[in-house]
Structure formats: structure tokens, C-alpha cells
Image (cartoon, rainbow, N blue to C red):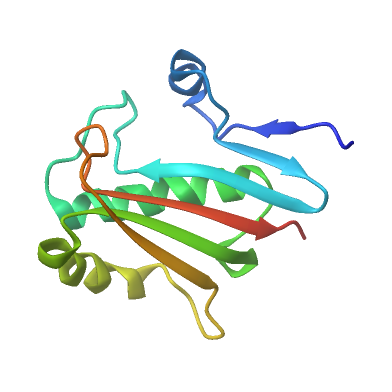
Length: 129
């Protein structure tokens, strides 16, 4: 069995350690990124939905970069959305700023009732370069 290698973006390791999880794990040629939310550096929630989605992508990109990846290395995406009927249109309006070019990664969207005060969470699997 291959050992897990944790990846931490600069400046947020204490936040991850406090919550007892790794932002990403390298294993068998892939990067498994934990769900990223629109949290500020201190872990607090960005309240505006579009700003929250942008911050979640910024946090995701920081984890990807710490592992030597970019969004173009992402092969699978899972989205978690509170009240998707009301929020999905605003969320999708932000995606083109970060999403990249086709072919797009595989995507699964899941409607949830609670995300610890957040409205959006994104987790991905990327192929390590």
C-alpha cells in the first residue's frame, strides 16, 4: 500500500491541523483534494455567495499549486450546494472565471442541507503531472 503524502498550501496549515484533516493527499499518481469552501485565512465564512464561490476556488487553486497542479490537471469534481434550486445559477455564473477550457472534468453536484455555515463546497481529484 502506498503511503499518504499530505499537501498543505502556504499559510493555512494551522487551520487544517485544528480541524484534523489534510487539505490534500498525494497517492498513486493522483491528488485527492478535501472539500474547499469560501473561508477566509482565519477560517471564517465569506457571506456573499459569489464571493464565497470565488474564495473557494482560490483556496482550491492554492492547494493544487502546492502540489504542483493546476485546474487543467483536475479529472473529477464534486460540488456540494445548499439550496441548489436558489443558489446554482449564481454559482454557475462564477465558474467560467476558473473552469478552464474543454474537455471539462467529470462533475457530480449534490444538494445538501448544511455545510457548516457555507453555501458551496468543491472537492476534486487531479492527476499529478
